[in-house]
Structure formats: C-alpha cells, structure tokens
Length: 88
Image 1 (cartoon, rainbow, N blue to C red):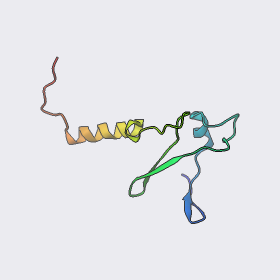
Image 2: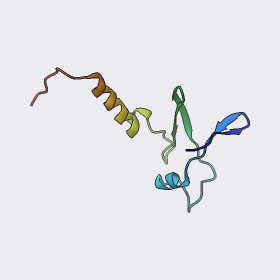
Image 3: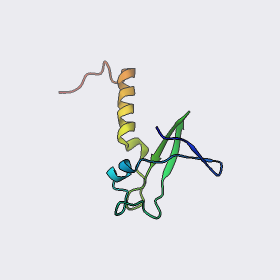
Image 4: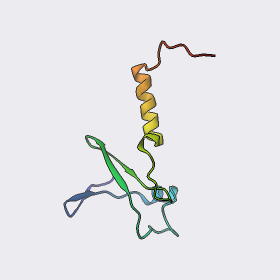
C-alpha cells in the first residue's frame, strides 16, 4: 500500500516502478522528463489515474478494462437482460 504524502497542500502518491515498466512508460529504465497524467475522482475515496497514449489521446474511462468488468458485474447483479429471449 502506498502512503499519501503532502506536496504543497496537494496529496501525492507514487506509482510502483515495476508497474510503470510493465506499461512501457520508462525510457531506458528511467522516467521520461515530462509525462502527463490525468486523475479523475470517481467517488468517495476512489480515484483513477490515466496516462495518455503516444499521440496524446487519453484512454476513454468507459473503455478501461477494469471499468468494463465492473459494469458487466453490476449489470449481472441487477439482472439486466433477464427475461429477454436471445435470437439463435
């Protein structure tokens, strides 16, 4: 678990180097000079960090694997689509 640190009144948390490496974000094993990140507050005590693609495009939150998985689970839990016959 990471520790929340104070940086001029803003909260700062580190991203594990191994995870950054898995995502191909290191240049020759080092952090790039400038890497922009987007942080969204999803709700109480829940945040998501997104890193733009090479061209600067930010991945759509709705298309992130974990969000899709959670949405599918929620739909199953609510019984969305039950009782609707599927065409063969």
